[in-house]
Amino acid sequence: PFIAKNAVFLAFASKDTDRFVQALDIFAEVFAEDPKFALMVSDLFVRSQKYEESYESLQRFHADFSLQEGAIPARLSALALALGQMEDAEKYAVEATEDEPTLELGWWSLLRVRARAENHQGALEALTYLEDNFGHRLDEAKLRRDKFQGFASLVSSAEFKEWRDGRK
Image 1: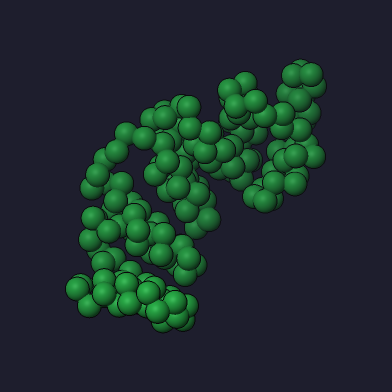
Image 2: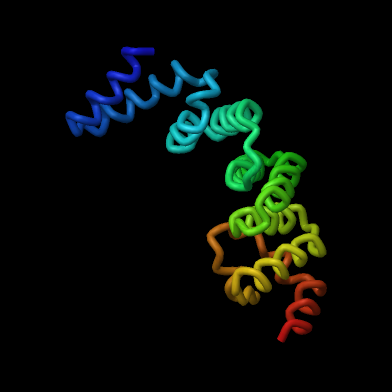
């Protein structure tokens, strides 16, 4: 563990990008199971596009520290969604909005999960909350431009059109 930590520090200090990335990978492997480092290791795994490992690490962090806030469940929701684990994605998005209703990220997580699951009514609830509480005006054009690219079914639905017309 000491060598892994020092390797990261020395690679960073030398400004050698390749060595730094390699040192981070070693650090992530050494501390992958340690809940104290799980949040940082999760980030390292995301940068390496190892989403399953990132998800597992973040779950360890969440279980070990049991924080009552929305950011970690929102991140877990995004990772679960990327991995196609829809039930977990929904569970964590709901947890994020319940634990911290004023965190916009949680509501976006809930919207994305429900849109991907084609739960249009549930997605409209999240849209309504985002508009009413965070000042958004989320019309079809904005949702189609979103980097998520998972809103096509929602914005094409009769429910969305009726909802949008009713909010003008």
